[in-house]
Length: 161
Image 1 (cartoon, rainbow, N blue to C red):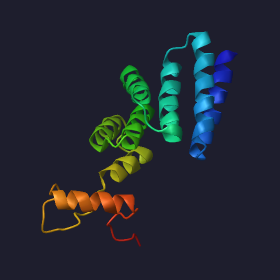
Image 2: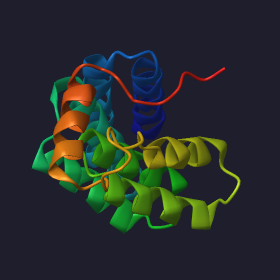
Image 3: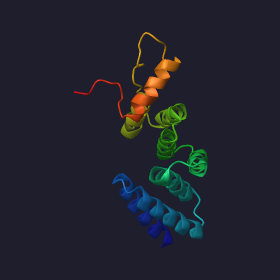
């Protein structure tokens, strides 16, 4: 019966994460992982580990350990779209947009029509136009203005209708 309890705790963690309660979700994922380890279940451990890395990063900030947890889970279960989404999300939290896009692309090769993956990929790809269009994107002036604009919360994009 521990497998049923671990999965139940895990699902509660996913609900907490979806509701924005990342700290609670991290605790629940940690508990599900503990229960599953006692049972010696390997594949579910990777799923729980991936979510634990993502939730702890969302709650308290990205750490190398959390990134490694998501990377290990994705490497261990390479056919899991869920692992690729979580890996992409943690890369985005870490500011590694290129790595995030790569993870989302790997997931899309597995499930080309997956709506959450398609949305995450599209959101990761969006960039604001350069602050000074006459200069290239990488020009120091555009970069400086872009950082300031980002800190102030402006995207530089026209509002969606």
